Image 1: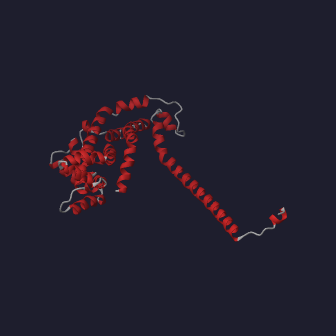
Image 2: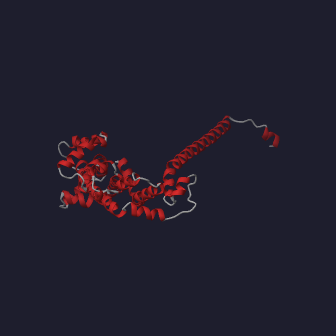
Image 3: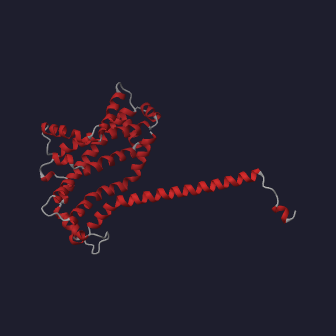
Length: 302
């Protein structure tokens, strides 16, 4: 067959359909690439806008007061550690850090102890009124925490706990109740029932089964609850402000508030104090991020 004959060969319907499909596929692929590019650009822009105040705070912590007030540049021209050293002494960091650590650890341990048992009861055991009691925990999600502030203070006063660390720990434990109960109930439900039955057949009691089988299986959920409890407790300001009156019991957020309300607050000192306060929280989240994601993923699947 000659070359002109090949050129003059008519196009079949199958060839036309295949060509149309290829064109459609190519156009669809181009649209997907364009859509992803736009989405990534928007997300990148949003991330930069959201991160800029944080980056400005970190930058200001290494500037002197004159350079902070001059503004206009993010990277310090003359970086210094003197601001951090000055802030460390003005903030009384060790005292406030100790108070924040005691309150945060007490709240986190209390939440894990109380609501791991509650989650085990809701997710594994069968008892009358279980659904109603679990529903009451879930309903607490719709109650704004600020509406409970006055009753908490009145109760603290009646129990002679107003102005004490314990008076701040107990309501903080209760504040995490709905979310902790939901996540841990979902986590315990995901553990195969056969493990509990095997443990009971081997003579293990309910508490031994809970401690030896269910808790190790739900470690990511426990770490997630610990993070979701520790971070808000570490940053708590409103309840601490109305509960604590003795400076010896102040937490880090209250110490930062004292710095900002001084006669002539220095912006670089405030930024350095903010950086010092958030470093423990950031490090905690970075090291436990894997467990946090796994815990949330397991809760969604459950």
